[in-house]
Length: 301
Image (cartoon, rainbow, N blue to C red; front, side, top):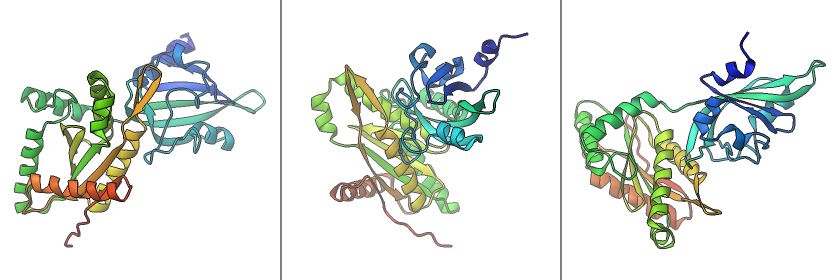
């Protein structure tokens, strides 16, 4: 007979259990792999005081509002949710969590078990990275596409629009007050923060979407098969997740706040013109004190 811990440590999915008061009392090896945190760093912490800090796609802190573990124990039912955990390296990772309440022999709830799996579609992303790396089309700092590849892909989309309708959004994500960050942070720390933002974007975009790094805290994306409203939703999600990511410098947490501007690629467009429209939206959203602005575009039916 196999020992239960050996079996649980062999699972592909991450798995952990908590007491009724949400104190973590088991953390398997796959949980270590997915999150970057060892069992000895997590065990005996309450899940809400630990480093994972699950958030939803709006950036809402689920430890305070909408914890899947609390819901399952309170309602005595199994529960599923799509959340974003905070990886040890600083970025946000999308995971599907499945929670089940645990009972004692009298039927009383004594805790809960949560399994989770990385929701990032990795295979297509890895293939794309290998192709870009071979063609020297990756930005060396972030590992995202560089400006040359983004421009060539936009030209391909524009050529395809001549033959058939194609709905492609262009998005610019800029780190707020980047010049002030450059003055305040050492080069290594600043680069690490940019890398955390890049990894959050990479981990939470769809396989067909392409994001790249221009320079000076500016990221640009080509978002496939979206309307203006959907492009806004993508930008809002990424902004929320980026602002919930951070790096630890000594005893200080440093976060990158961003602004997002978006527009739709037009059949008679050029990539620089689309980026310029995004930057105009960025100017508008910063004047209004918001986070995301997308130029409206109405499609012919």
